[in-house]
Every structure is written in structure tokens, then in C-alpha cells.
Image (tube, rainbow, N blue to C red; front, side, top):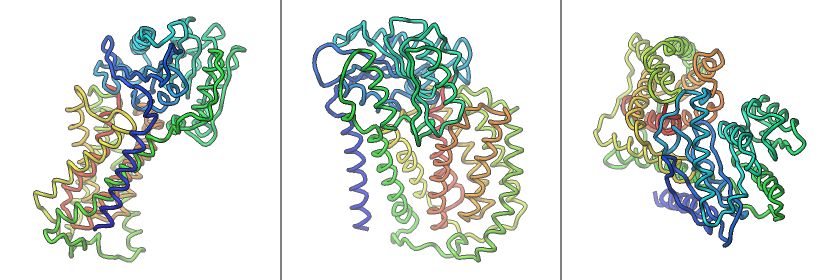
Amino acid sequence: MKRTLLLLLVLVTGGGWLIAGAAHDLRREHVTSAGVPLDVVHPATTGRHPGVVVAHGFSGSAKLMAPFGDTLAASGYVVVLLDFTGHGANTTPLPDQAAGTDASTRALQHDLGVALAHLRSLPDVDPAQVALVGHSMGAGAVTRYAAAHPDVTATVAISLPDDAVASPEGPARLLTIAGALEFSGFRWVASTVAAQRGDRAVRIVPGVEHISILYAPEAHRETVTWLDSSFDRHRDTASIPFPARRLAGTVLLVLAFLIGFYPLVALLADPANDPRPRLGNPAAEPRPMKARIATTARLTAVAAVAAVIGAVIARFLPTTRLPLAIAGYVIGYAAVTGVLLYAYARTRPASTKTAISRPRLLLAVPYAVLAISVPVHVGMTHAWPVGNRWWLLLILWLAFALLAYGGERVAGGDALSLLAIAAVFVIVLAAAAVTGLTHGFVILALFPLIGLMLWQAVWSAILNRFAVSAWVIALTGSIVVAWPLAVALPLI
């Protein structure tokens, strides 16, 4: 136990140090202008500086783009990062689910205008020297804005999703950046737009995809180099802050919560704090691998049928009208699939698992909330619910709790079967996006979703090791998946 506590102390201290020390010499402030939340980062040097507005992508936030704020401010720029309509701390609803209508376009352009006006009003900014940087949806927004406002000196569009926002007429001084592991369409758009004018360029960053490109040192160096050349500045870009420092700190904090979960459950499940598995728990008793594989194969087929039915039914449920982009479909899909799995479990022989039902085991739920919200909010992106997100979080939690409970009842606590059910859920969700049952953005969010469901599976395995009741396992694990969806997907 002492070694575990020491390890936790090291992880928490290391994670906090990495996050707190990210470009610590810069001056930061948070303001709200015309209803748009803004994070402002000032360089350590005095005098007037060029200014840059940094825009996030769909389901992103100003916090997610903070590494670019650190890089640019450390390079002598005053930086304003904004929360677009419906994102982060901005509670104004986005007009549509995909940010693709004329109304949503106007909303994003308005937000950029507010951010630029605030940037130009700052006393340490030269208002004649301003630039824009954006990622994904934000890349499209800044490119469109710069095309309509020639007074923007330069623009950097990272993972630009659409070539229609640029033309040979504008914008000038545009750099497009894409990841080598992104879908080929992003690289095609980046190259096509860059080829329209002689004052544009394209960079393909190796080894990164749509999200990891935000933490790629090469993407940061190329951004600074392009802006410096546009403003006729000559600086050494080798000394920029490590872009993944905050992310590394977040990982260490998450790891600390993961490691701390086992002794917590041991304490809650056993008054004597005995970490040994409870007798009578089939998940803790070894079974022949051949039998486990056969059972898993059968349950995988059952889960596939349930998921396909759930994916189709969810398209027509009233949950699709909930004011959270894409989440309404996912809520219906998870709930229907979970109910179908539970119905199947009711047709099978009752489990011999001896379950523990102690009220104090519910303390695992607030621990799970802290584990997902604190590291992500302080080190990665905005992860605290605002406005309607609170009650939408409860609905998401209920839907994924139904899915988790149905899976637990079907699998009987077997980790291999639970992983197979989670894999089926993700695969069918991806198929639903490809076939048009839900928004195509789901494809880009698959890697984070897979990570969250693996996290849920690890906690399920720990709780099952102590023969905790299936409904407590469901409530605890599902919040890890529901919380990020509730705080990240745009309000509509």
C-alpha cells in the first residue's frame, strides 16, 4: 500500500507540474466579449506585438487549442483563443448539428469577428498585424473569414475539411497543414487550396491524424515559421514549448486515478481492506480459454444483432431532437442496444455470481466523475458542464448505463465478452455514420470513444473482481463515457 501511495504521489505531482509549467512565464486572462468566451495569452516581452486568433474544431474548445496559444505567445505573439457558439463555455446554441448551414456559418464568422475585435483592442497588439489559425471546423471558419477580410495578414488552416471556403481571389498568405494519417480527403483539400495561388503553401505532417496533429511539434513549428515570414520576423523556432506537455500531464493524472481505483474498491467492498477477490464470482475464477472464446463468439453475435437493431431504431427516436449535436442519436442507440441485451440476458440461466450490494460502493461513482473531469479539464479541453449540458449529461449517463448494465448481465462479468460487446458497439456506430444514419463526424471521434470504452472495461474488470453488483458497475463505468460526450459535443 505504501508503494502504491508513493506512486500516486509521483504521478499526481508529475502531472500537475507538466500542466502548470506549460509556458508558465506567459500572462493569461479569461474574458467574455459579446457573449463569446475568450482566453488571452500575452508574451513575456513588453511592447506591441502581432496578434493571432486561434480557432478550435467541431467539439473542441479554447482549452484544446491552448498548446498553440503557448507556442505562439512564446514566439512573441498575443493570442486570443475562443469558444465558438455551442462549444466549451459558450452556451449559445449552434443553429444545426453539423455546423454546415448558412446560419451556423454566420454564427462562427460572428464569433471570429468578436475575437479579432478584442485582439485589436489590446494595448500590446499592433492592430494592423493580425493573423488567424484554425483546426478542422475552425480551419474552415478562419479561411472563410480571411477571404472576406483582406486586412488579415496571414492564415494557417490545419486539417481543412472543405476547399469551397477558399478561391484564387482569397485569402492571401494561406498555409494549409494536414496529417499524413488523416483521411485522404484532408490532404487533397490542403493541396488543392494551396495550389490556387502563389502566396500559399501546404505541409503534410508525418505520423499524425486529425487530433494528434494538434500536439505535433512540426505542425507548431510550421505555423510559427509561416506567420513569422508573413510579418517579416526572423526568430528561432527550435525553442518553442513542447506542444504535448499538457497532454502528458493529463495522461499522468488519468493514470493516477486508474491506479487509485483498485485500492478504493478494495476498501469499499471489504471492511477488512482485503484486496483478494470475493468467492463465488465467476469472473474471478479461471475458466478454460476454449470455453471463454466459444461463449464470447456467441455473445458477440448477440451483441451484433442488438446493436444493428439499435442503430436503425435510434434514427427514428425522439431523442434525435435533443439539443446536443449527434448525442441524441447515440443516446437512442446505446439505450435500445442495452435494453435488447438485457432482454436476452433474461432468457438465459441466472448468474451464480455472488454480488456485493453495499451503499458505500456508490462512492465509486463520484470518484469516476473526478477521474474523467479533473484531468481533462485542467490539462486538455473544457470538461465542465454549462447550461443545458447538466440535464443532457444525466440522459447520456442513463443511456450508457443501460448499455453497460445489459452488457454486464449478458457477459456475467467476463472481461473478454465485455470487450467484444464494446467492440461491436463501436463498429456498428461507425457503420451507422458511413451509411448516413448519423453524422459522419462520428468517424473522426472513434479513437477517443474507443479509449473511453477501454477505460470503462478496465474499471468493470476491477469491480467484477470484487463481485460488485452489476448496476453499480454500470453506473460507475458509464459516466466515464457519458461525461466527455456531454461536455464536448456542441449545444444546438
